[in-house]
Image (cartoon, rainbow, N blue to C red):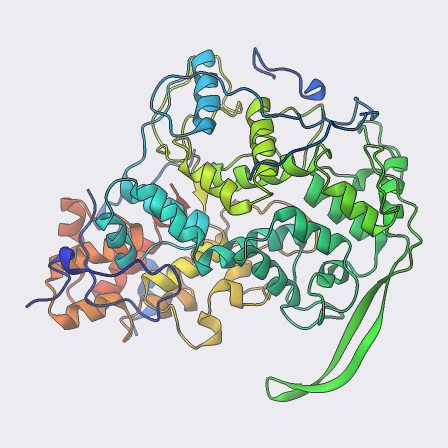
Length: 588
C-alpha cells in the first residue's frame, strides 16, 4: 500500500484554508512534534441512538480522556485640539506619539510582550511556557478562521520550517474563512440580521464580509455606515441605519456603545445617581440623528425560493436637521448631522474610537480586554495596562486602521502563544487582576462549534441547507436550532454572549439529531474513508484523534478506544465520545 497516510512527506501543495469539499483520503495523519502599583490613573492618561446516552459514560470512562479544567503606514498628525471635556467622565486624550516601550527580559516576540513582561517583573509573576505546535495551530485556526484545522492543514503546518507560526497567521488572515468568522464577531456588535425591514436578505452581512475580505480601513467603513444614505441596493452600508430602523434612540445607543465603548442608555430617561453620563449627554448624541428618515424606494412582487414574495426596499435620507453635540465637546466642519457625527467618531483625536477597536480585538483573542468589560470605558474603570492600550491604539491609527495588521501583531506576540496552564503569581495578587501570564480557556462559540463539527465529521461542503457553514445560515437563528441552543447572539441588543453550559446543550451533544447524523459512518466520514483505503486500525485511530482534538492519542487512549471500535457503530461511538469532551469544546 502506498497511500499518503503512511508517508506524511508525500503530502504536497499549500494548505487549504477555505472550505474543502471533503477530506482528502491521501492526506497524512501523523502528528507534530484595585489599580496595581505603578499604574498611572486612567482619567489622567445508523447506530442505535436510543442507547447513545448509556454508551456515553462507558465510552468516556474506558477512554480515560483527560478533561480540561475550566479555570485572550505612518501618518503625520497635527497638534491635538484643545481638550475641554469633563475629566470626571471622559478618558484622557489619545497621545500624539506612542508611549515608550519598556525594557523587559526573557523571550519576547514584539512590543506587546515587552509591556506584558514588564508588568510580570513588577508583580513577581512567572508566565506559563509557550504552547506546543498542535495547541497553537488549533487555537489560531479557531481565533482567525473560526474552525478547527483538518489533517491536511495540520500537516501543511508541520511541513513549514522556521517562522511557521507567523506564516500560518498570514495565511489564515488571507483566507476567505477570516472574513466569514470575523463577520460573525462584528455582526454580533452591529446586530446584523439576515432579514432587515427595507433590505434584501443578507444585505448587511454582505457589507460587513466585503469590508473584512478587502481589509478596508476600519474608520472608512464606520464612516460609511454612520453617514449612509440611499438604498441598500446601491449602498449596502445603508443596512446599518435600517437595522436600527430610523429609531434615533437605537441609533444613538448602537453608535456610542459599539464605536466608543460607552453606554449612554442608562441616561436615556434621566440622570443616574451613580453614572457620570447625564441625560444631556445622551440627548446631545441623539440629536445627530434628528434628520434621519427612511422611505419606500422599491415595492414589487418577486419570486424567491420558488414562491412569490413582496420585495420592499427602503431609502435612507438625511434632511440635514441634526443638532448634535458630541460628548467630548469637539465639533466638525461637516455639520451637526450624521455626516458630522461620522467625522467626529472616527477623528484621530476622539479618545475612544481607536482604543475601543483594539480593545475589542484583544478581548476576543485573549479572553478578556485590557478594559473589561469592552463597553465599559470610563475614568472609573482603568485599563489593566494603560500604556499598552495607548501604544496599540496609536499603532492602529498610524497603520491606517488596518484590522488585519492589528490581529497579526497580537497573534504573533508570545503572550498570545502561551500555554493555558502553568505560570505562577504571588498569593497576594487577586485572580481578577488581568496579567495575561497564561492563555485563558475559552468555550467555542456556537458558530465555531457548529463548523468544527462539520470539519471533523467530513460534512463540510454538503449541499444540504442545514449543513451549511454558520455564516450562510440565518441570524439570529431560529429557537431550538443548534446555533440557538449553543448561545448564538440574538442580535436584539448589544451584549456579550453567555459562556455558561446548559442542560439543552448537553442533551444536544449526547443525543441530538445533528450529532447523531454527523458521527454515523456515512460515505463522507473520514474514518470510513481511511478504513476503506485499507489503513490500519491503529493509524486510523491516530487520525481520528488528530482530526477531532488536534492531537494524537496516548498509548492508553489508543488501546482502550480500539477495544471499542470493533465495527462501524464502535467507531461512531469513539468519535461521538471525543466530541463530547471539554477538550473538544474549548479553545485552549
